[in-house]
Length: 154
Image (cartoon, rainbow, N blue to C red; front, side, top):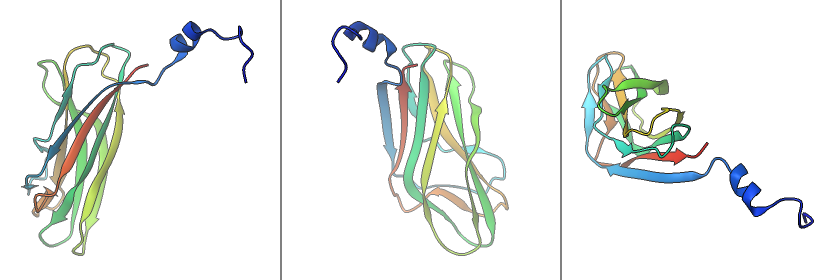
């Protein structure tokens, strides 16, 4: 127990950081695949407008069914973001990679903390590619994928 008078309610509120200020979550259940060896957009997005330039955005992409048709391939997923009317750019680098040599599937489990330093609208979106040009599915069989963006007060 802290003796009364040592810490005021106002000083506790002012010191509180890391609060979740807003959460935007979208679900998708469409099939999406590529044979491209260059990063392509999934079309799976989450959009929010930070309330402060010091806020951070915690991004997650979970669920779905990562799959491929045949052969050996290495797949990559990156997170891209755009601020206001700007173009998308790679904000994370490689955040998820799988090497497929046998038939198996996996679910997405991506988390990334972004510091966009803006109060303009931000949109986040996973991009993906296949290393060998074989058919790689970011999502297959219409399994739900959730893309979430959370504003964290700093």
